Amino acid sequence: MNRNFENRTVVVTGAAHGIGRAIALAFVERGARVHAVDINAEGLAETATSGGDRLQTLAVDMGDHGAVQAALSGLGAEILVNCAGGVRGQVGRPIEEISPQDWQVIFDANLSGSFFATQAVAPTMKAAGWGRVVNISSGAGRGVSLTGIQAYASAKAGQIGLTRQLAHELGPFGITVNCVAPGFVRSNPTTEQQWDAMGAAGQQALLDRIAMRRLGRSEDIANAVLFFAAEESGWITGETLGVDGGK
Image (cartoon, rainbow, N blue to C red; front, side, top):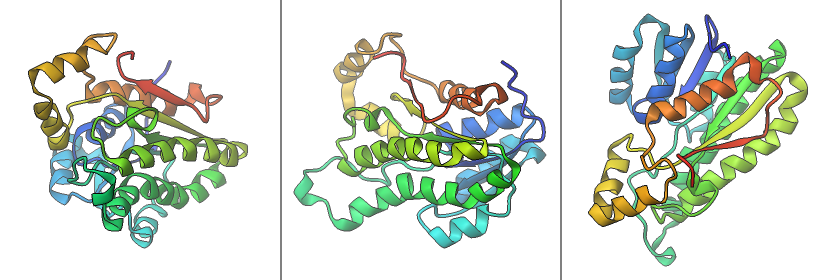
């Protein structure tokens, strides 16, 4: 499969660190012009240092519909990767302790942001008759979240449903919409905290449940995104690919 994205215009949200940064840099390495988007301006500066002149950064709150429209609608995106999300500093707590604000902020970052970004770039892709949208969900969206955070599991499951729905809506315009559901990847401060909190016994138990007996790397997820974004993947849409080492 030819994974040359020379002069393709790519937007990657959640690109300030971890998986999103790896995805953005993977496209840069293959010749694309990349717009790296995140709410974390400091992290974006580090991404920009690694990306060279083919990578531009945009600090955007993906839960702010107006800001997303203003930032993304004029970029000419041909490929969109919705990687923004995470748990926004929360930890697992009993359901009765979750405030409406706790719930909403995670939905805004993970699910609403994916919808807003796709909404912003869809007109350009429709006009071109070609496009690729890849949503980064999670194993939590297909099963149970290791975090115990109800909103996170729900929002990630919602991304999978959004993928299927948009695949049927946008398919007639030559746009594919697919989803990657990563397993546990130590890719950012939050996942490092989760890993440490498991302790030695919990870490080993997690590894023992993975067929490949290792954790994933950010590059493993980036490789799956490149597959879905490739020209040759034009008859694959509405799919969710688990990239989790086998469970």
